[in-house]
Image 1 (cartoon, one colour):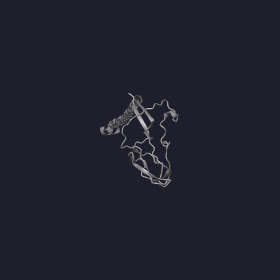
Image 2 (cartoon, rainbow, N blue to C red; image 1 turned 90 degrees about the vertical axis):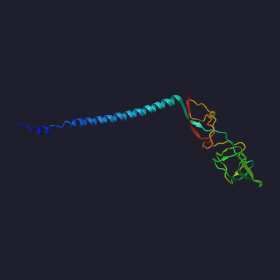
Image 3 (cartoon, one colour; image 1 turned 180 degrees about the vertical axis):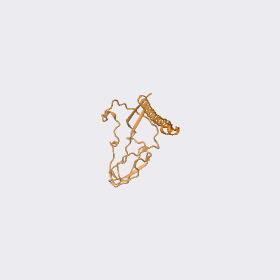
Image 4 (cartoon, rainbow, N blue to C red; image 1 turned 90 degrees about the horizontal axis):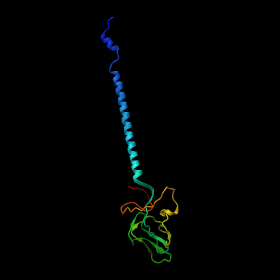
Length: 185
């Protein structure tokens, strides 16, 4: 029996089939390795950032923007006839903010700004009866007196005053909360 060399080649599997399978396996392993390396690099970066933040910085979300607050009140009782100012408006000392018509019917009394500043809250409306506010406090803003015991239990509380300089041109008002990060080393 003679065998035809051409038919013998067709019966045998091609020698190029096995390397293709190995090539696919190597590509898959390479992709998995690259993904694992990227994940490890991202985790290392987050770990390093956490370590630096926890050793060099003190943070709090219990900070409070505070300022010197001044009440604006009429010099006499009556009906608020005109009010020209709204919250957020900047005023100058001596600027007329509104007028009160006294109960006695005499001339209108001007309500003026005692200092330069920004109006934070307006309690009165035109047509409302108003009186001198001689012992009032700014009740909308929480007390900055930390000794009253009205706070969430924390491990340690230290009052720190930070001067951020001029805030003109910004929308930063007293009574707002702040997130503060202080470098300790």
